[in-house]
Amino acid sequence: MTTAEFPEALSKAILHGDLDPTCMHVENVRHTLDLTTPETRLLCQQAEADGLLRKTLQYLCPNEGCRRGIESSPTPLPPYQELTCEVCELDERPHTFKAGKLMVMPFYSLAEQTSPRA
Ligand SMILES: [Zn+2]
Image 1 (spheres, rainbow, N blue to C red):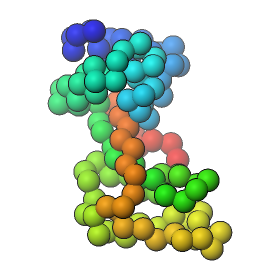
Image 2 (cartoon, rainbow, N blue to C red):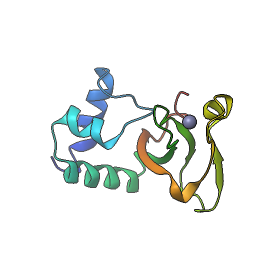
Image 3 (tube, rainbow, N blue to C red):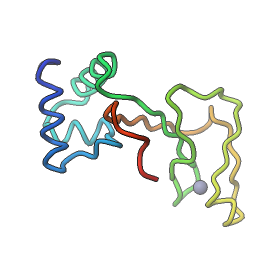
């Protein structure tokens, strides 16, 4: 697929309900459009540069069985910034983590969409 074909393929998939315009992981896009991972990364990067997609970095809670997104940011957070998982705090498990220690899951949204559903 070329960078020129990608926006149309993407909007078709969204129209069919195959992709969520507020939260598209590279893996979703790859699977839905039947692409390779490197190809999908490149197409998404290009679409981001073109202003079609917006990238968000989601920081995941490292606790076993949690792994929820506890913070999202369009740019990398300072590695020493402390993030709190409110769910794990209620469970009285370790709940404060340094951003640099967390797994980051990037996702894309259509640029004209509002922030992703919680
Ligand atoms: Zn947690």
